[in-house]
Image 1: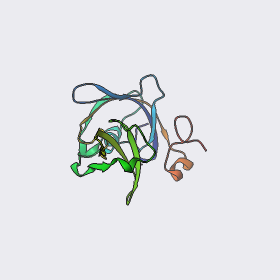
Image 2 (image 1 turned 90 degrees about the horizontal axis):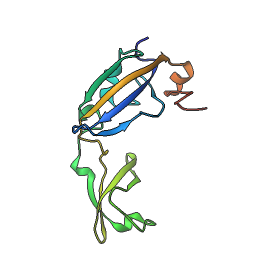
Image 3 (image 1 turned 120 degrees about the vertical axis):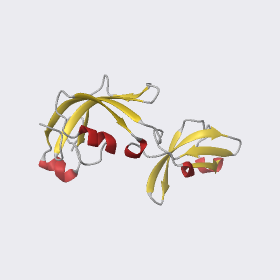
Image 4 (image 1 turned 90 degrees about the vertical axis):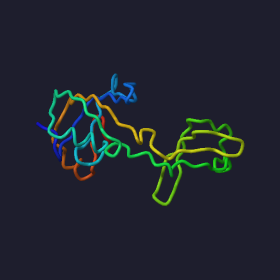
Length: 160
């Protein structure tokens, strides 16, 4: 069976950056399951997965526009330390969630000065080409329940 709309695929992956450093990997963990066509993985990877079947091993490079988006300078801001009420020791690398007009967003602290905290609302992989090594380990028809809910159920997926 090939990966196509209305299928659930599970795969192992290793994600590296341009320097070949491993950013993320499923090594030593369960394979990642997703429902094809539901936007549950980055668009460029989902497009590359279509048509593959169990046992396929392949590499795919995903450009920023089809990954986590281009880096947006307007998402870098300096905010007053008082915006982080209840957090005494703010350090670079810390991540926080906020609520804005478009809903929940994540920011990463990049620099801390006396009364100013510099934050970046870009995804950490925004603006970067994603290099995936993929191994497809399972492909099956999605159940009617999965299709109606829009996500994978069972092992590695959502439990009801």
